[in-house]
Length: 318
Ligand SMILES: Nc1ncnc2c1ncn2[C@@H]1O[C@H](COP(=O)(O)OP(=O)(O)O)[C@@H](O)[C@H]1O
Ligand SMILES: N[C@@H](CCOP(=O)(O)O)C(=O)O
Image 1 (cartoon, protein in one colour):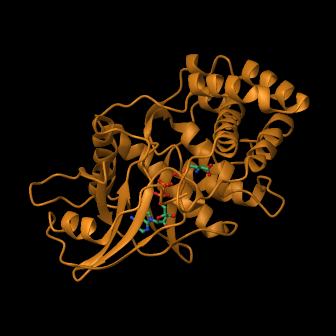
Image 2 (cartoon, helix red, strand yellow):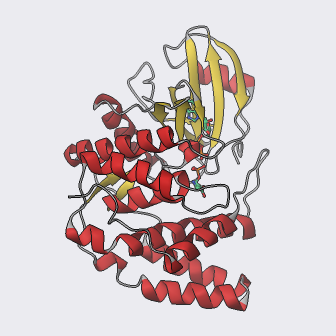
């Protein structure tokens, strides 16, 4: 969903007037997206995206704006937040925290990804992980093992006996996730096809850093593989997988611990989105325009990882 909070024209004119971005010409609610309210905003000086944060309070939002600014300044194509006349990135609108960011060119990938797009994402994700070593702000994940366990508890009573049994077995398998000693740092943690903008195979930008957090770097990689590499059958496709992974590995090799835990982390990443999509389906939030993504897509990916683990052997890791 995208418009949980409706913004009136006069309110927006007053809000825009606090920035040096020109006068409002037009604005339009964006139907894509799930977490926040988003509008495309056109002024006589440019194109922007207005986000009203629906899930976060003021205090925690600085981190995300720091992440976006950091990546932008370090050559990762991402949307720089606009500063108001007082130098603030974060403001208040309609009782919600709000930010205005640059509108990037291109379109999100609404179809299956091309091999070129998989390669571009693998390459950019590795660059983010390398440059991210210098990022000093810390934020714990909100969708980690603890969240997965407690959300599973909430959802178990609503599941078929077969799915509930599988979920319990999966939680059992993943029970030591938090004890793993794997390279970690700032991650996007939601780098799906609908969070990257492309013109053909040229990556224009990465958006929606609002799940960014400290996580295992290969969790971020697994999130991307689980979405970018799917084929018509909704399964991870070997060709796309090879393209994304080889592009990543050319810049950043996986150490032994990462290699031996790759299947576990791919499963944790699939489980996270299966559970969050089930949560959205079973407990939808109210709004004017809504979209709920299909949880079964991630059940299928999770099953694939359980029965046919992705190999690292044919890839270019040293
Ligand atoms: N900086 C941006 N430039 C261009 N389009 C954007 C930008 N930010 C968001 N969008 C558009 O808005 C949609 C929803 O944004 P997103 O951040 O994914 O929302 P949500 O946080 O609600 O999931 C995207 O799919 C994209 O089409
Ligand atoms: N990418 C997740 C949902 C998170 O919402 P987003 O629209 O903010 O990316 C999914 O596909 O389930």
